[in-house]
Length: 179
Length: 311
Image (cartoon, one colour):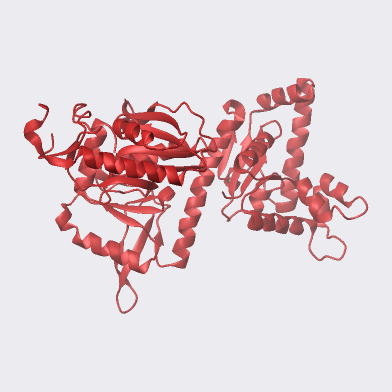
């Protein structure tokens, strides 16, 4: 692996640990939702691998979909505006929903996604995230399933990118400095 | 949702707005006829008919009562508003009766020509006939409110919001009213809190950000469609022997949906001990108050991540 190889501090979460924990969360979701299989919605692009692995560990007839959003420049604001770039295709009215995230830091984007999905009147919404930084969370979001708690640090791999590269590394590395 | 009152001109879409709002909020529309039926429907004779037709009749007292129909009607409007909290009053001067309460008072108008066109289309009559009907209806509405409450219903100061439906759909008007109602509900809640504890309500002040970071943070919240209030409250946290406030804390932002106060700091994390202390004191003195500090590092990272993608 050439990309950012000089900047890698350590492997933070190994491939084995990811598989083990994903199996555990999958089994937990299978138990929790056995009476009413959920619609599982993955957030593009960071959650791609976690979403694919997790949904295959849920032993229920789940429906799956993906949602994407982005920060789009806007002439009236320096910060831009957040817009859904790929909406879900499945009708979630009255259904139980699990949003699958790669990482939750401030909770702002997750809160935004929940607000957006709530307008479609699901029965309930819970969140499964591969990584969660409890020290940084500003907004209380309903995170029910957490893969690993993290602290500050620049991470790459298993969906997390540095300038769109490094997502396909099958484990998570911590970088020495801001890439 | 607070009580909404709709005063309207005939042909202004005010009736349609009232019904649409009631549907949207899962409540009901209450009209003068509803209250007459509830209060005096059981009375034999022509009293209900007189109440429907003659404003002056409201100045009389019903048998066995020393209060006039007008006073009883106003009392019933206040009772329904108090008991149900979530109701749409249509007409009957409810805007005047509920002045000074948390009710959102709306007036719906339209130009004479638009109203006439709508009326002649709806009732299949000529424009001239529509004009005559509208002139009479305006006069009757005005006389009713003037006779019962001694005010001119066209006085703009009686309403929180006046909507001209010439170029607005019922849905657009409803969006405006509901946005105002949501803010009113929030503002009322904060005001009630400040009445029961020592905190101070600042909501009437215009937000003036102290620095660019606060303005930037407000833009980020807007971007994520997260509703916020800027410094809506001050929490006194220390008093001298005479009870004068010697230290207070005004968190920068309040996020109603999350019932959460956020204090932004542009100082390095190690220098924010004082703010942390204040935050802990607020939590001690005002139990149930959720406050978090957004540290400089968090904020810088947030901005950085937003530039790349999201938070």
